[in-house]
Length: 372
Image 1 (cartoon, rainbow, N blue to C red):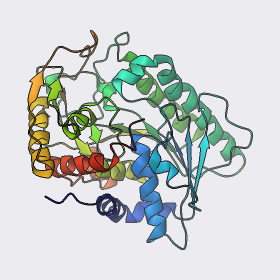
Image 2: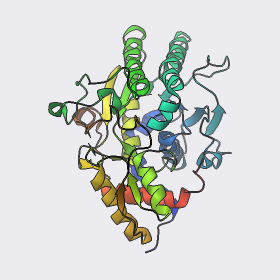
Image 3: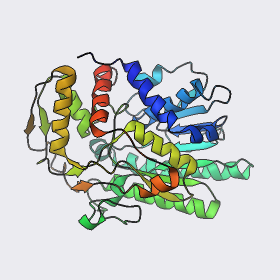
């Protein structure tokens, strides 16, 4: 079977994103956008989609994109390849430090800086907290000062997480934004979960007391292009084993269930929250169906890899390498997205099988470039 070219995959995804964001990008046209943590997984399509709009419908009024990142895990090859784009600036900066005196004003801000992979936030717990709290405060204080200078920010998006719900009770699944959560404040995931919860509180306070148009997105199990093969989450881990021709190793019984949202759908949702969300409000971004077990997810990957690459591996179970690997891991995670659907027009359309196929194609083309 012929494996599609990387450019064909990217063009399909970016056309899909921009086609679903005509109204949102038109409202952003001619403005400036700051994406903190823009070198990370979600930054990949956040950046490429805005630049794709500039090359197509936005030629007369492009969006000026700025990426700020501390490059803790290196500078990705895709971002280096964009050097020289006239509508993109990239700056190495750690948002937990005081903001630079020369920081410009921005029309739109997406605060995506942070650590979202469990093995990495357990390794850097204080940095995880600092990015979600101190970095957030720094940016919001800048928005207040910017407004005092007579230039209001049009939209501020904080990346929260579905982790703030913890391990929901069965009667709270699918989980809506009204659910208050069942979360440990001392467990191995607490640095991430609790700092995201407090980050949302901070956003609400700035919206109420300062009129800053903060909106909070709660991602549910996003995957796809941009998620490094070394990220240590389940799909990139399995992709790495598939491309190496090895069996898939699972460190659980495979019974926990998830819904998985392909990155093109997720990024569409995040831009909708940024531009059209209500101030101080949270929005679940993900897919409601299908809710599948980790065993079924692995079997779908095996089948898809067999069709694409002739893969003949199997699923094996082994003890987890870390004692805390599964502590506080939710048994089920499934969003209710009625709020995003009715208020924002969010309607994810990429099926799990198509999304896994696109992801494996992307990893096939990027397994060397994204090893860092």
